[in-house]
Image (cartoon, rainbow, N blue to C red; front, side):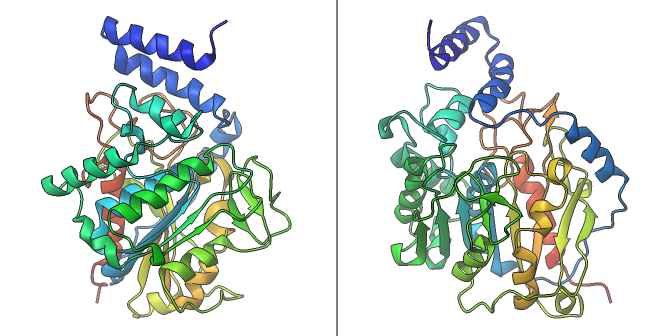
Length: 384
């Protein structure tokens, strides 16, 4: 019997010749993601989605945020999305936190393979480093995008601070892949001294907390939030914004559920109608605060796990102590158009299902442009 990967490659070659490449490749994505350890979420998704839809939501407010001190972090597909938003809009960014994610444009590593195959093999758990992320090519492609204005000038990255993390027990996105994330950012201009890359923790594929009720540190299991005796959100924000105060013990505000659909101009983003933000009372009262965007990973949106990511991973307590606004965009599973059964952020092109060359990485990409509009709204002058 042929290995599964060989069978998939054969089907893709066949679909190319039959003129059905885009459709068949998208259908293969669900199976590939499942074999990569991102199994189907089941009926609970629909129940939680219905609960979310019935919740009262407000408009995201214009609050005069300092857009030039924006930053972003995320796990897994959210880590790939972090790199995409960060590089596309580096002109407003001061840093990023990348947990178990490969380099920007990773799915474009090998031009003879479909984007989804690169995303689920090369960018997750390649058989050897030789078939892992093609970082020299990714840098060259980035430089070309910079020249066309599809992304901000890479020179913006030179004074930023990055946090990168790979767990020793993470078999979903391996350290060999995450190593290339560090290499990519050093190559495009981030000083090595400004990058904190941690591979020392015996962690599975997860965001890390200091909560005994979360999953044991070495395990990889839903909801991919693991107790390893430290708050990763604190370490991320400490690295991006030097001189942070310790997290607060109490919050001054409630998490805001807001109408995310107002920022979406495409029917194929797989983004939820509702997203979340935490805005400390000081920021609401007139202080100019920076924005930190937080991207959940696959199967971690509110439609699947409720408030576990946006309320229970420590970010809001750091926001409270340090006058930061936390923005939690949301994506949810989709079994139609687009095909995104695991509720992942797009790092291979599913949000442009009919495009010959899907754009998931530039300023104009469907998800990236929607999130930027949220940041822009927060930065607009508050109403008098």
